Image: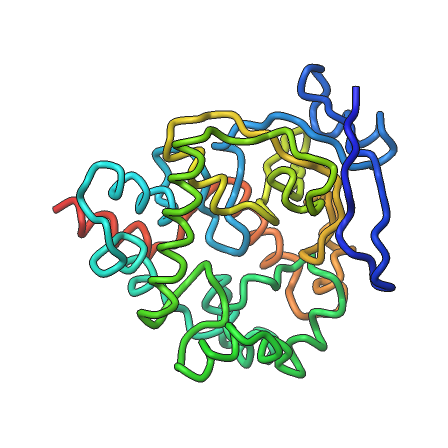
Amino acid sequence: MFFKARRLLSRNNRRTRNRAYDLRSSDLGPLNAYYENMGRPSVIGVELEHCRWYGASGLSYSRDSLHPYIRTLAEYESGVCAVYEGSILQRYWESWAPRNLAEYFRIDTTGCHSLLLQTPPNHNILPWSPADRVSYMEQKQWMNRPDYRALCEAGCTPARSCGPKPAWFGMTRFQRLLSVFESIKTHGYRDVATESEQYEDQHIIVNCLVRDADVRFVVANGQHRSSALAALGQSIASVIVHSQTDRGPAVVRREEVSHWPLVRMGIFSASDAEAIFDRIFDAVPPREVESMEQRGAK
């Protein structure tokens, strides 16, 4: 069984069609689906606790996760906090504020590559990211994005997975999060999209992290939807796997660490890259986030 889906706009600005195979009624997992359908995009059901926030945080989308989006929605739903000011999201961004990529990835700053010290903790850079991330870092291309430029000009991090953040940015993200949550709560989660919709809007899109025979999923598109589903108590979500995005390969295998572009180019050492992979795979949150929770529990 399959349904029609649309790809993102191609470089020559023409819309092209592709088939994303609906495998939710089958027992095929993400790796079997990859070989069965020759790497074509497929829709499968995955456990939200096996999904990870994009970037180095290692936060999962389980309902009891320390993910600030999920915690903020739970706080909102219980009536504890209905505004950004004083919310868990605000406290999260205040608590975890690495100054550069080395701190973001917990890499020893005494011997790391200079680009890791010179680049802010941007969540679009991971050891398995494409080689063009080097020019992105060298030329400070995050300044091309108006929202990231505004964050930099305010002395804040051009990324969403860590702080600090100005109030205007926090309020914008908070309202967006609540809007998605209320929509899903009221109308349910639409997991069958019309053919006219953009490819990335049809389902949550994930990249697969593979370690031995186990797989975890990094959410490349759909962070708000994933958080809303988790906060509402849903344990399974429909996702698209094996879809190429600008955030790296659709499948990342730990055993291939020496072939990852930024490892091969010497930006990350193989041991640091493996440690980053494992923290994300195992959902090990930043120490600062754990400390924030411990302080809040007292």
